[in-house]
Amino acid sequence: MSAIIFAILAGLCWGVGEIFTKKALNSGQVGPMTVLLVRTLVTLPLAAAAYAVSMHLWKWEKPGWVATATPPVWLMLTLGSGLLAGFAGVFFFYLGLASPGGDISRIRPIAFALSPATAVLLGWAMLGEGMTARKALACILIITGIIMLTGGEPPPAPQKS
Image (tube, rainbow, N blue to C red; front, side, top):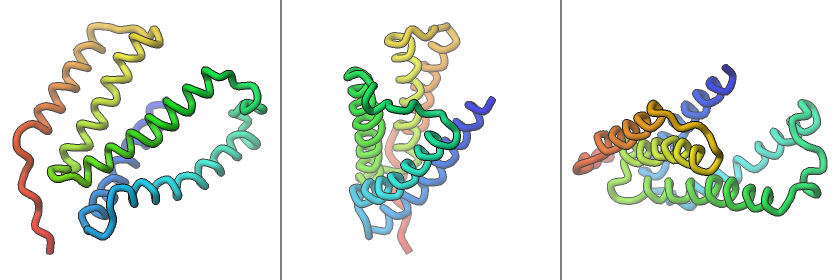
């Protein structure tokens, strides 16, 4: 059950946090790469502290992993987690938010609903996870929902006061 609670908390944090991000971008005082840099600078020390607690207090991490991890694991960590999920996804998301028509009510559902659909399909194709009619239907409904929620002309931009 804790995995579901953690997922809910992650979604709530991202949902609320990105509202502040969009408001900061709408202020005209910062651009998307400033947002990306601040996010990274704030995240790094917190991630290091969480890692230290996880390694030394909770003993969740593998001691000596830096020396023992194989090249394929390093590749998956650096390209998958670091480059694609950690940088590129956030990079393109913030570029989308800062672009004309980048309403958070359109950009966020596209980015964050395609993510689970992609995970289900790649989990099935690459990790051997089960594919059921229910999962396939859910992916179709996700894509349909994105089209319904974000399709058509973007609403007019709100007037700044």
